[in-house]
Image (cartoon, rainbow, N blue to C red; front, side, top):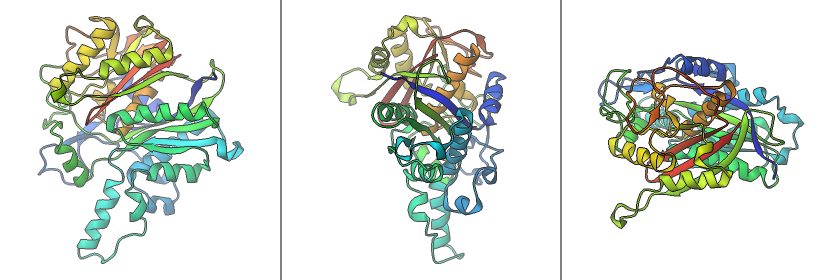
Length: 394
């Protein structure tokens, strides 16, 4: 079966706009967590987030399209253009029904929707934009990317919070095994409007720290929640021979946690084992794990237990560079996959910043570690019980 090869990467992240800008900042340990500046957050318990300060939508999109779309869609459109350019793919030269788009979404176009509701109920206007009907919708990004890039092949959107970015790549691989030859896949989020922040606060997992260096501490004794973040990544995935591009999507699996009262164990370990089996690999083949890193003590314990059950105590290097940017919801999985592919390309594992390594994990902390992993595992969990795991091969 022809491999699903990642040939292009586009990144919009709090610590870098553009793949190489993000990658150099990540290796240097430079984060993008800062006070929320999309609105006045002084009255909210969560005041910090991974924010993208240098994004110029006008550099990627015409003015008409900017007025029709939410920030999360603009991120994905820009990242898609970057990924296609990186892959050297000309959408106009592709058979239109063999080129598709799959994105993941969690919060949708929340900022666009909130602004229009404020106009409707305020003194400014008695109407909303005609684009309110689509810009807020969780499928808006897939639709707008497919229209702008001329992709009329398989198009989908997946909603599984943090796990969705991995599921989108798996869906792209599935499309390539059918009729598609090129897919754009990934996710981006912009969940930093008042409405979106309040929705996230309801889950009880957000950090209330006002110190950017101590606000997101997964696997630490001081873990007290995460900070939200905006941005994500889009990847070009092609049906072609291995040996070109960044690497292959070798394996994937998803599971769902059983209800608490059943007494059955969490399903994260099973997702990892199934993804390894799908890739035809053993735990000993994996050279690095990109962790979910919830920074909620109970969830961290579950992840440590799953990883040590599969790989043994300190059996594989583990990292969570998302400590530099926050948890990007549906943008996180795709960004972690991009980061893992860059790590394999350059022979270096990026660090987890600001935390002390727990005894059970070989956590890469403070500075990058030289390594030459041939296979990487990316793990993601979404609120509500979603678990996904992707295996990448160099």
